[in-house]
Length: 116
Image (tube, rainbow, N blue to C red; front, top):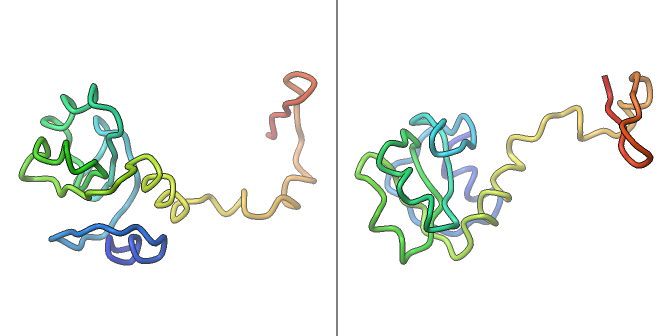
């Protein structure tokens, strides 16, 4: 999915200069040029300089810290924008709760179950 399609599909309002094929959402230190990351706490700004992310959701006040090789996707709430974008990468198995009925499971405790 292209960046423009992702932003439009999930109503994420921001400007960008380079429309690229987005492969994944990733942590800053694991991102590739086709990935999007986010920063919602100032303590993670130091990770920007070494990150290879193609774009990062970030607040305007911190956007000047984004290196030239990365696009700053300026939003009011980077965490929320990242969460909205994550819907594009849902695993189909989880879309249909009926598909877990036939799977073996192990009870972890009284309220949690692990499906195998």
